[in-house]
Image 1 (cartoon, helix red, strand yellow):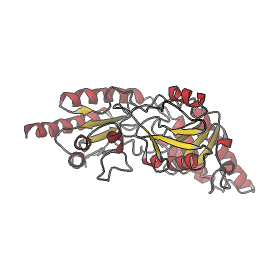
Image 2 (cartoon, helix red, strand yellow; image 1 turned 60 degrees about the vertical axis):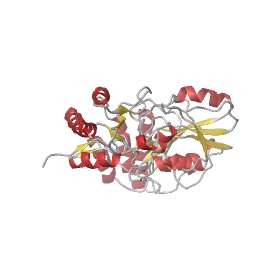
Image 3 (spheres, helix red, strand yellow; image 1 turned 90 degrees about the vertical axis):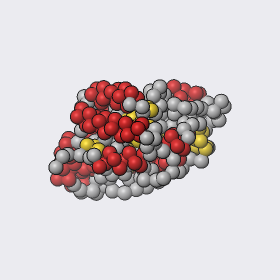
Length: 348
């Protein structure tokens, strides 16, 4: 049977072998890290070693609260903040928008616009990389006026962590292990100053409840320590995708914006995203329409809508995302299928 082609890494990335091996080591020495006996203390030592490796790999000198994933990290950051008011970019992930009532507009490239007047004590939730478009927000530049006004910056770095440097000026950062080749079921909230949050829970320095998943933490650390030499190839492939899809009559979403090379979205005029997904799937190619959390919905993408796209154009966009297991022949196959489909729409 011909192997299927996986181009949906922004939804989740296959587990790296280094992470798998580290997890097996953790399971071989598993005990509850909060237990006072020798086995528990040994598990605690392995957990704290993993926490330190995660911090070092991310060049982070603040606290690392291990969570069940980025969604929980977002919930802790935004649900337990002491900030007076929360504002979020209109193109943020649904996990953020569910918790933040006030929106910051984005322009046609998906870049956030801060208000003219920033009130002290406000917290701004602005993602590092958009999961649908790959647009990179200039977070360190945005942090300057926010901090000058006495505000706080929370950054969802689920897509950028392990691929881009973290924003040095962010006060709180959410990351996910399975987006970078680590295990599902673990992430982290990075906190510059724990006094920014209300405590809650018996573990993780009093900021989370639940038995610490030491084997998953080891897998998380191993994934972050793994080499990223494949990123150069991905950048070349994304440049090729952009050029050939545009030449075939497609439209590149946020073409002029700074974008993470692993993520790209393309519009095929005349064919709905759902029809495209079916045809790609039948050809053995996995791509998506929008983020994984909303791709099964018939609602227009809130990201593209916030960028000013109409409903018709929005419904014709699919997302292609690459990662450590991607190959040049995967891109060849995707482009051949795209070009065949686009030719069919142009003949109508």
